Image (cartoon, helix red, strand yellow):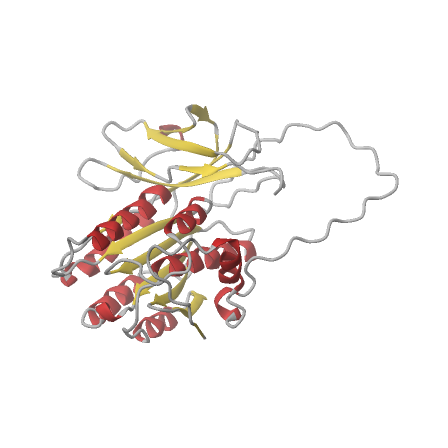
Length: 353
């Protein structure tokens, strides 16, 4: 089902909470896009007249990770999860590190790891393709590159296909069926303007629904988005999308296609490159700017290699204040000259959660 998005021009004021609520709820007319999105909070239960006496509060026990199994954490314990990529100076992935090789700092304070996994955990992946009018001559190559990436997904991985131009369409909801993903990619056709921010906003909420539907599974979340230009018709702003991305556990990989475009140096393209770089850097992903269509398959291959070479770390913050503030994260490893990449931080929980 297709959901038309009302066109908006650059420089228009941010849509505000009402528009965001419509996007998250699925635009009313398209429940398939965002069905089961933001739900109203449940009514508070009626307190008993004489509540039973409660024991004195105890500090939460540190969870124990069992090799080969997802971690089990006590209810109410806020766990900060990190997907960490480590490379050497030549860009080769370092995959033989141990738990003791990692040091994690939050606002300068070293944290105690409560979870470590060096195995290739299952993925929940959103594959976003720009199908605006400027993609007409490039779309065939883009489709084949995306299909090549989909073929390397494992049976335990889940992926969805979203295309965006003036509208955003979920062509294939999350599935592990490789054939279904390929068919969805081949359904894409070019036309219209570019609603990049709308597409990422919807993809982030779609990933959130997958996680909420399978609370006992540990999956790495990622978005791979390809676009050849600037956003021209989204209802949501870059700042709103960035805020949502930073509140998620999703790494965003961006591909800015710049093939023989005579206008590639104009301000709009420079802003688009900045957007692509920021989305990747803030979430622990990576940005690519291929100038030849023939390089595209290799870019998707590099992303696939990275996703299969990451470490999963978890810790319970020593800062127990539920103040909603931004907390900066730095991860270091004991290997000399290693380069570490992960998300730059997270927002602390609040008492209203």
